[in-house]
Image (cartoon, rainbow over all chains, first blue to last red):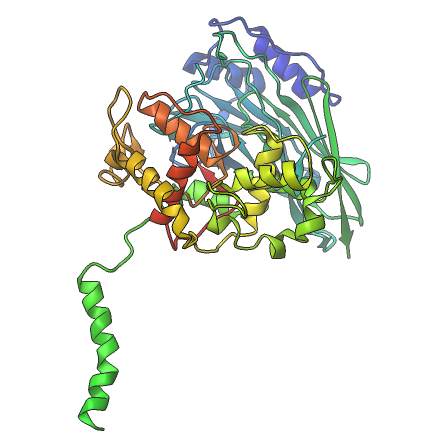
Length: 154
Length: 106
Length: 258
């Protein structure tokens, strides 16, 4: 439990706490329940509706270490109505968070790209939070394979 | 000393939304991987990325261990005035890197 | 026109179609062609290709004086795009005054120790990989052109023997997978033909740049054989054969593989 709260606390602080999240071995791992809980922590009790969010992920990636991901939200970015945050979560990594981005109308476009790690074939969920307190989401499944001849570090 | 690759247009039209891409060399060690002796390799990640334009923050992102090694970020920002965009990464082990690019806005 | 003029004109057309009929089309595929569109895009995008971080690191080292001679690579070789163009495409080779071939990393080491009079760079070290990536980048897009040096023949033959020899607990040879079963799947993964068109490569598996030797070690460990140490001549012999096998294929420079 401490892991998620520490992540969100550091996401909220502009300076960025240097707190290291140390998760007890073996007891923290994402599950569909942990994913749902992580989404609830962001949305509070507000309904999360499907739509407006486009989650670009390859349907299959040959190695889960580096999966290109782009989230784009079909939404105005005006002073009155804009996407103020994008949160991405996963279903089967050791912890459910991927990233949180804070946006303002100055971004012009609610589009964020990055590369993520996926431990296994799983679902990825992106949530867009608007300045009016609404939550929109999209999800995508990625099949993760691995090469036959890898480095044996053990 | 960090090794970073920034991609941003050198010039932009006022009001145009431009894309900034940033890549930085960093192991992004998750803290979940066992090493050769079976012991967990300690976590070593970049936790925060932020960008400012002439001192004003234009984007902020928090990374989790699920962000890939040699992390890549791309985002958009509306060009206002000519000046300097500063990109900042901070994280474990007192990691702190700043890179800047100049953009001319007409 | 005279009949013999016509015959002369048609002769090359006839020869070409005969060659095609005999299977003259190049059936070789680079690992690039076998990758998913997402990874090909990652390699093609020069604004976000992670391998370029290492090319950039190499660029910084290229102009840095080193060793007791306090010389930089640039002092002798000038700008990399002119001084090193084509070099990576024709290695391994036998350096002047030597009798055994070295690979590109070995050649960089020779420069570092004899010309710059500095300490050798450790195998798979960040600096050696960065320089290797930068020098290879100068040959991007060029065809692999193994030198015609007859002295290379016995080493190349040794490499060919290694390629076709079964080894390890799994008792597999390189040829078993990469000649006989390339294009098929092994454990959900497509088996590539195994051409050295992309080295040094940013392998997603390693989350960093690595050499051909590192990749060959992964294969050797993959068949559960004991990998040779990094300085073993066997890797150079194997690379000689692989480069001959890939003759004419394009070197990529700043490449990604899964």
